[in-house]
Structure formats: structure tokens, C-alpha cells
Image (tube, rainbow over all chains, first blue to last red; front, side, top):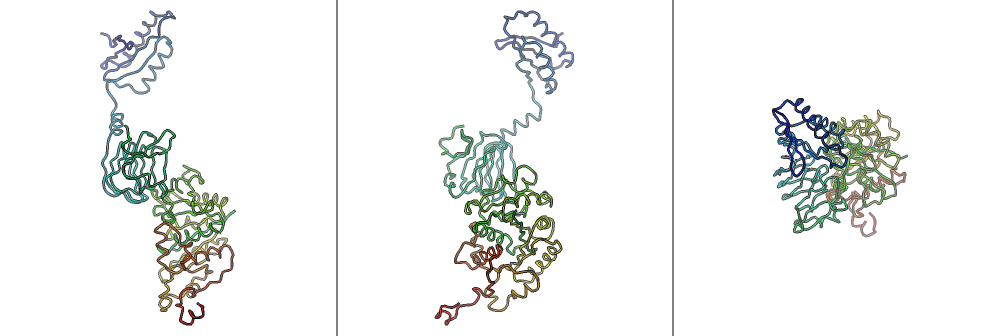
Length: 212
Length: 265
């Protein structure tokens, strides 16, 4: 019984590698199978054959994927679209969970303290001067904030900061820093949100204009 | 090439930061290029007294660890055109990330660009103090007219004298209480000067306005109504070599009836 199944659909070919098979054997068989397909279509007028490798419940390492891609580089009439797996590594899953998490934080963040959050942050507490809160996603401020508020750390320019920001010292989104002084603090009152505009600087708009 | 001056005291709370802020801003207003360096890592205050906290993006630790160059970390004080800058301390790192070498490199670089590098020293005589004083060309020793403060200042003067700075340390007596001088219950100013044995650069009256000004991020030196502000003006002018006589009784005597009649003070 073969470890490799070749299927065709409207997106092209799928090569399904049985997850229970020995990796070395299966890969060898895959190569042979593909090489056979290639022999049958040596005509230069033929379209490039697009195919995807599906590994089921097996997760290939980056090195293994690289080796497979390298192999098919030598066959210009074959185009390996993707290597798909039904499973993800725990690390990757944790990253996905972290990025989509919303943390609710309360209490006082004092001078010299710096708190980091994965994902979005709803801040109910008090942020003192010389303290800092930092999230990889957006930040929703419901408490009193005087220090530095940073959303989208380190490079998420889609992140947004909501809430009363009149007293903050600095707003930061991704790598952009906005210093809030007496001259511009009126722009940062309740009912506004701060975001990175097309010119890659921080702008403020009415909450009613916010579109996700 | 400018000079670096450390403002130090040994004891905490005697007015190092206020002195640094006021003297620096007067020097800047007199057309000198001045850079204030806060070395009180973890307990920074100079930025708050100057009202510059919100403008800090990078600090001295970022410079010492080569994340940015000095010019990127300097915060310009918009009230003094291009004359007054602040290199803030870090509020997040601890003091051991700096050493004599890194502080020395930073201060030497600043001396190329500025006439005065005013270093605000942390309290105590330990690690942070050693970093601050080791690279200074001169020192302003701040003391209050009270035994504990003078005794700590004495200890500091001893350490400074052993370092053989190019400019001899000078004394500022801060927070002099008018009413105690009048009642004769304060330590006498000439006793303090004689005891410490270093030149007196100026005396500053204890005044509510000093604290009020700091609270609003202003410096009292530019308040024409303030005796303390006037004293800071005089101290800065003396640092520039102007000969302004010390008036120990300035403002301390009540103007009597005859004084008022004849317009004398």
C-alpha cells in the first residue's frame, strides 16, 4: 500500500502524505511519484503543474520543508504551492492565542514600573507618571493614565488606543511616538481614539468614525 | 570645550535637583549652551522639576548601551531656544547598568558641544555618586544650615578634595530660614563656610515659591518677586566670573520705620 496519494481538484493537484508512514520512505516515494508526472508532460507548451503537499497530522520542521522545496526547484514544470498540515506546534498555537487575547488589568502602575501584555489590553487601573504599559495589540483606557501608553509593540501599526488620553505624557503606537503637551492635549479627550495615519504619524479622531 | 560640574550634597533632600535646574536655566538664559545630566537612575526628578517628563523618549541608559547616540537622547527645553538640553536618567533600569567609563564617555562627548554640563548627582556617596563625581571638572556642594546636612557635606568635600578636580569645589547654602536667622536659632552661615573650608558661591533663602515653581515645571529663578530666584541668578553669574557681592543679610531684616521713611533697606 502506498504512503502517497495523488488527488486532483480545481485548485490543482494535492499530494497527501500519510501521517503514519515513515518520513524518509514517504518522501522518497513522493519524489518518484512527482518525477513520473514530470516525464509524462515534457512538452514545453504544457501549463506548469501546480500542486500542494498535505501532511495530515504530521508537522514538518522548517528544515524538512526547505529540503522538499529545494528538491522541486530543479523541476521548472512543477510548482509547489504550499506544504500544509492539519496540526500546529504548541509554540505557534500559543502565539496565535496570545495575539488574540484581551487582558483586563486594574490596580496602580507606579513610577518605574513597566508592564507588558500580549494582545489587546483593557486598562481599568491608574497609570502614574514615569510608568509604562505596553501591549502588542490595541489598548482601551477606562482608568486614569499619566505615564506612557504604547500599543502595537513593537511594529503593529494597526493597533489603536482608545479612551481619555488627555493627561498622558506620551502615546506610542508601533514605532511612532506622540508627545502630549499643553498645546495638543485638548485633542486627546474622551470619545477619541489614536491611530497611525497614512503618513505614518499618530492621528486622533472621534470614536464614532472608528472602523475596524 | 566646555566644563562639567557635578551638583552634589551627600544628604538627600537638600536641593541638588532644584539647584541644578535653576542654575542651568539661568546659565542658558545668559546665552551659554548648557546640558543637564540626571544621574539619579531609577529615582529621576530633574525632568519633572523642569516640566520635561513628557518629552523624554530615550535616556542615558539607552545611550550607555549604544541603542541610540547622545544627540538622539537629548531633550531640548523649548523655553530656552537652543541653549538648554536635558539628558534624562532612566526610570526603569537600575543604577548598575552605568559605570565610570560609560558616564565618562557621554559627559566628554557633551563637553564638546556644550559650555556647561551640569550633572545632577544621586544622594549618598556610593556607586551612583562615584560615577557622577569621577568625571566632573568641578563641583557645587549644596548644604542646608543644619547639622546633619553640613556633616554629610563635610564628608563629600573630603572625598572631592582627594580627587583633585581641576576646579575647586564651591559651596551653596540652600534653604536658609529667614525667621530662624532673625531669631538667632539657625546655624550661622559664616560658621558653615569656615567649617567646610571651601569658597561660598551663594546662599538661597527657603521659600514656598521654590516648591510651587517646581510643582508646575517652572524654575523659580525667573520669578522677579522671589529672593531665592534672585539668589540663583547671582550664583549663575558668579559662575561666569561676574563679581557680585554676597549679601548675607539680604532680605533677612525687616525694614524698620525709619528705613521705610528714607527708602533704605
